[in-house]
Length: 281
Image (cartoon, rainbow, N blue to C red; front, side, top):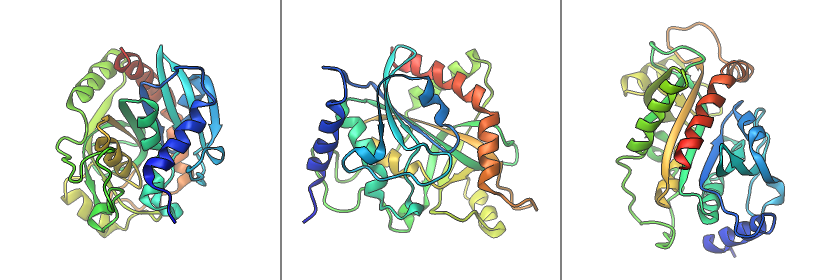
């Protein structure tokens, strides 16, 4: 018999709290995507837990995802950070993929900053750009895959979730202001999620661009759905690690994605530090 979701959350949060100082709780949850996990190394950690030790957590099998939960202080703000995430293409269902977000919320986080590596669909973008997500297109949901499908627990969130807006407008404006102060050029755009793990065909890329998407990836949207279901504020950032243009003859590979993520790391860290400092005030 499957364990009720509330019990699973309570078991995971209970385990994590036993590793923390008394009365310690995070303010902000952070999910670090492919090649972006180095931010977790800058947290003054009070606990660092491998996913394999936490009840209900899956394992991250993708290169560039360290697979640990780091809790501590960054820029004076208490944070809980996923150094690597889980993906639908790894064989996990979306309830497993998004379970850590439920746990972050239960631990006390009121805001989620979610990041990813993405392919740039907008021809004005360049590999190495950072993009604030203004909205998303949920192709997984259109295909019948949604973490909110199934019995709804009203204590966790509403049965029918409004997603307009999905990403907090005030946090977006704050992010743009901080980027200017930090001298980090940022883009804004719409993110579209596909299941993966294959990259897209030329015909698919043409279609996605026609639909108004500026960046494409294989994550983030399910986590945003669950965060919003739980009443969390959300800010999304895509690192444009390759250009996904139908006209390109260059094949994409994961090594390229990680290499570009490493190149943009100083700018990403500067932006994230500024964001965390201000959101936490």
